[in-house]
Image (cartoon, rainbow, N blue to C red; front, side, top):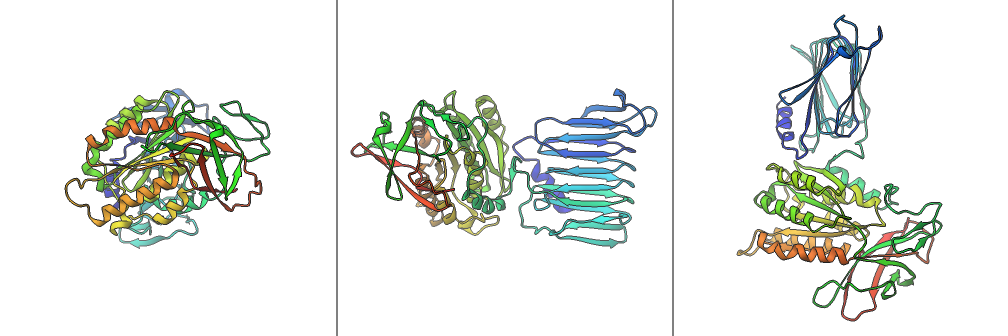
Length: 514
């Protein structure tokens, strides 16, 4: 049980506050499902009579929401409860069955003779079962390793997940003589606010394919025609490629007065017809990724202040998301939204988190979370980090994604990446691993059309906010319909030129034609 105790301590530091629940139903069934959302939903029924309001008592007790079935006449009451992500739940029955389904943060199930059915992503969930007698029936999912044993004080079942593997949930079952124990596997839920770094390689392969359907508010081609923000009508029968293009003059200042005719787009060396180009009036999606791993603990105050200041540079029409690398996980603290005050409150309340630093995997997951499905919008990912993946130093929990694969994939990202590189070596020459981290972040930024900003202190960052604000507001959205409409999945290289002497143009370097 030592690992589960350590797990509970680790989870107490999750940025998003965990909700705690206690469900007590001695003689009826309890069915719990994690469905997302912000609130608990309770359904109740009885097989013997109409349900009554007083059959179920709801109360708060020491920060825990307690739900207890207490029918005055002793009738059997069944409970069906929907819980949000990041939930801790304690369930107690005597003879009623217990069914749990979804990605739970932590669950403790205690029953005497009730059947127990658990449906969870076992690739990221730990399990311990302790029963005085072996269950009447046991069913385990194929493809996962569990160990069973009979000991003096009863029957045991536990997972065989590698102790070094990063995981999220934990379920503990304590029983006397359960009728059955049935386990079923669920795939990791795509809408979960927590993802494991080892999911990144599969996500990276998916990024090479065609993006998922855009969200409802995003412009997209369909069977009807769509009208762009500048009045250009896009036909559904012609595929459109959207680019985010940054243009600076010889002194590094953004060039603000370009029009559609000033751009030339080459695809595999062939000139294309630019159909639209817009700049400062177009909304921006800005995602902040805060590296809250152990190597950045000394910079935590600076990181929080930087995040607050970057939120401050956005306009009312822009949307902001907040992601974090903490406790070895990628965490969606807040998806793209316009509520700045909520984001600032969250940032102010971030506890002193730590953990490993699989930063390459986390950048993949950050991009895939929302930007992948928004290829026609202006997107930017600001990575506040020292850039030191555990791959570089050979430490625990390195990224499974190599930097080479990340950089190659980033060439086709529909987002600019701006690393805010926190460099602690102000007066001393930086060691080799720090120089390597900085070089890699510079390469990553260049591959997407963004650029790196280095800082030794908060004072160094002071001019950066204005620079980034000016650049984001002056970045152009450029669209064209490829002459080659044979979308066979091949890589196509893109070059953008501007009819203006002495300027520097930055954009992604190509795309996979799906």
